[in-house]
Length: 166
Image (cartoon, rainbow, N blue to C red; front, side, top):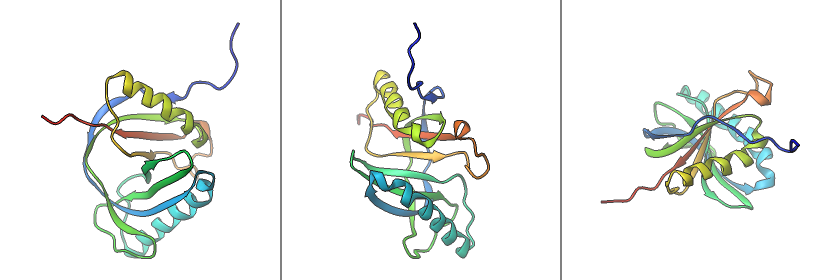
């Protein structure tokens, strides 16, 4: 008999990669988890408006860098990668995503499924014998305005890893 319920998250085969440092334009946000939908879109618009006003083009897709994982609160940066430093204006500040060795995968599906995708991905990390470093980031590879089908949205998941020092 086949079980019904929520299907397993659709993840690409995870891999371990070394990322380069990346200049960013960021807005730091701390909000209750229930408020994420209310703060995300206005924050993204604000970062892009600040970049346009400074004549700076994004150098890749926007992402959120989660600084602290807490069941009640999101403590994160709304981030847009840039090739040149931005000037601080309003809530938008210059930032940097540091170089890191990360476990990386791509999740396919609506943003609501990320809550199930992350635990499945982190289980893979532990099964491979890796230890997570603090923080993580999600890079939004699909623009919902360009593709209105949530089942086709792609989100790159990045979990920094700890390394033993010699």
